[in-house]
Length: 185
Image 1 (cartoon, one colour):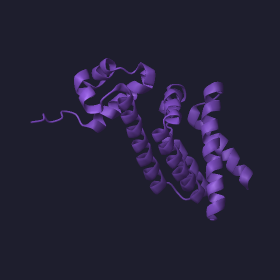
Image 2 (image 1 turned 60 degrees about the vertical axis):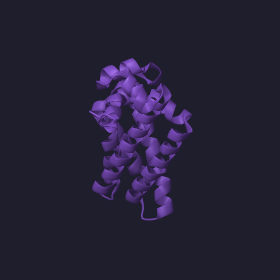
Image 3 (image 1 turned 90 degrees about the horizontal axis):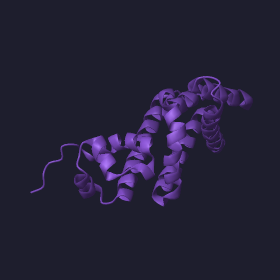
């Protein structure tokens, strides 16, 4: 008879996401993961197989969480350009801006290299562009085009903030997005 799980897969993967952000995918070992979540390395091997499967499971769980956060922000933010800005800022909170910029790039590399993760990222991008587009134009095609532009600008603004750090991240990114919207008029 199988023993009951003392900690759910979702809880394990959420804890290990934080560990993965610190160590990077190459630095995550079963010993390191076991210390972080309180399970034995053998238990983690039983649940996930090998290290690559564990990293994949962690990153797929992270995509699930981002999908849910995006869906919630889409449902709650106003269908206005300001609502589009607020939606994006909710997805990249200022308190994690430093970590997301530096360590997040290591995870992004994995997302781009792995076809399953790359597909998840592409699907999320399409949903995000549509959510933004509904806030930028009543014309669906125009909205999607503008939504993609805004998503690209958002990512670029975050990256350039990481280099310059002339103001707090939320302020810098909001200003870049507001300037772009003003340019649309």
